[in-house]
Length: 81
Length: 165
Image (tube, rainbow over all chains, first blue to last red):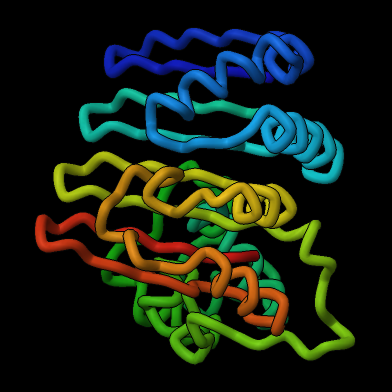
């Protein structure tokens, strides 16, 4: 997984880390807490299924760009799985 | 994303021109065309109508890359359809203040999320998408529909598009 944060002044920060670091039980637990905060109520079984599906999608969609946010003032955040 | 230079290069080859022959038609140097195609420079605005005509497209298609004759949504014949698991759902949010958000979710993941009861506003954080049935989008894709399936413009000027490719 690669997270790129570009600031409007041209500074760019790239952070790489293995996807398994996120897509594991601990990551799933954090995701579960975040989803709960956003009133998305899912069971742990469903969440495990979601994590499994994400791992599968990583293989079927190499170079998968999950999110790209561009601000009007030039800032940019990109998450590549 | 296809740049204007790459688009000119593709359209030139599709029209059967070399850089030299296109340069002759337009009355410019082949080096100028080479610079356009390498995205070093852009064509002069006064040349656009002649360039578009030579390449057999409209100036709008030349600049945007969108064909006027190309429908926003198309139905793919059954024998040409890709597996839904290989397809990608794209949510594009262009906000009124110039911010842009792009979220790409593989259809396989959409199906799982749907079974979990997730709705579009939870993904896009846009209330204007409330009421759009994610299940219907999946059904449309299963029926062979691809392209710009949903386009919503909210009262505050935000435009949200959902397309599948």
